[in-house]
Image 1 (cartoon, helix red, strand yellow):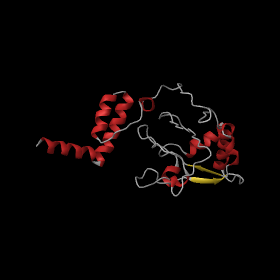
Image 2 (cartoon, helix red, strand yellow; image 1 turned 60 degrees about the horizontal axis):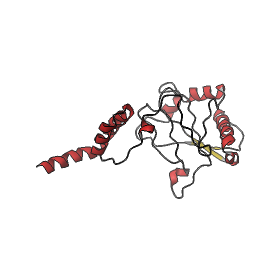
Image 3 (cartoon, one colour; image 1 turned 180 degrees about the horizontal axis):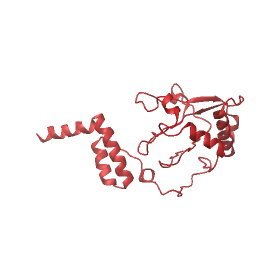
Image 4 (cartoon, one colour; image 1 turned 90 degrees about the horizontal axis):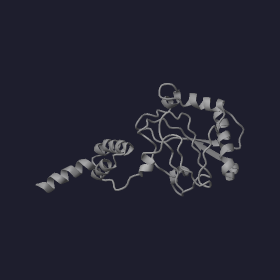
Length: 201
C-alpha cells in the first residue's frame, strides 16, 4: 500500500503541469534563499541539478564579479542616446510596441525567430546602424569582430521570473555542425527588471 502511494506521488512530480508550476515555485524559493525547501521540491520534481545560489540570488545592483578579459567585457553607455531611444521605442513593453504583436511573440506556439544582417553592406535602416554600433564596441575587446560578414539579432520581453534558458550561441542552433559566432553581445534596452546575464567560458 505504501509503495503504491509513493508511486502515485512520484507520478505527480513527473506530471508536466506540476513540473512547470513547481519549477516556478522552486525558482522563487531559490531567489528568496530558501534553499532547503527548494532542494526538496526539485528532488520531488525529478531534478538532480540546479544553478548555484550566486546565479539565482545575485548580488545587489552595482556589485559585479570581474570576468577574465578574454571572456567577457561590460560597457556602460555603449550606444548613443538616439540609438537607445530607437530601441526603447521599437521594443517597448507589451501594448506599447507593435513588434511583439506583429511577431505573435506571446503565443505559446511561436518559436524562436531572429534577423540576419549582411554587415559590410550599406546601412538601409536604423537597425543596420545599431548593429554597426554594437560591432564597433565589440571589436574594441574582440578584434576578430572586424572581419565579421554577418550579424544576427533577436529581442526578448519577459517577466522577471521567466528568464532565458541557458544556451551556447551557435549557427542554426547547432544543427548539422556546431559553429559559434566570433562574439556574442547582449544589449540591455530597459533594465527595469531581471538580473545579471551569466557568462560561462
